[in-house]
Amino acid sequence: MLFRSAIYVIWGTTYLAIRVVVDPSQGAAIPPFAMVAIRFAAAGAAMLLLTAVVARRALRSLTRAQIRDQAIVCVALNVGGLGVTSFGEQTIPSGVTALLIALLPIWVAVLGRVVYGDRIAPLTAVGIAVGIVGVAILVSPRTGGAALDPLGLACILLSPLSWGGGSIWSQRRAATPADPRVAVTIQMLAGGAGGAIVATLLGEWGAVRFDAVGGDVLFALVYLVTIGSLVAYNIYTWLLRVAPFGIVST
Image 1: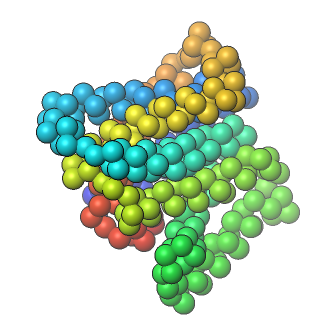
Image 2: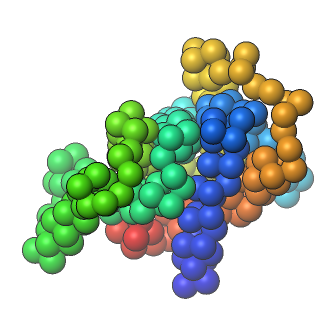
């Protein structure tokens, strides 16, 4: 319960930290995928150092299948999930983002049904319907809220699909190292590499302005690396090993 509570609190606050780093209206110094690359490269380097000290044998026993599958998990979670979320947060407020990311259990139920043939209980179906209606009300300008950028909104709505798909596959199909720290290390390093590749394809590195990184942006970035990645991400991947994903996702 303590770990799940940590996920509730920390994961929600990371959306504000992401917004601080990537918000173009505030003269953002680091574009979204460049931010993902920096965030996970730094966290991955720290995890690699830790793993080399305390779990060197587990690191040496890695198989090619484990490296491949954990890299795939990383692309789904850190690039398709967090990277696309960060891209959307350039125009979508962090509070709205946090609420829309709550669609994750809906995507999990749909993916479980379509891909793995899982049964959707009647109460779950009602919850899905209520959730969809709630999101429709939230994003509709007719309810009195400001109109939301369509591209940013699409990114926020679809990013949980990638995160949920990667998480389910990680639990059910992926070759996973016995030591969870090794798995997290691979995922973070691959996340840094994946973010760097997408940032390069989008031409983001030319827009990075390290000279414009103020105290608020630096604090937010350090928070994402330490609390958001080294703490919350480790807890999340551990929960995927010990708890049903239906519980983890909610």
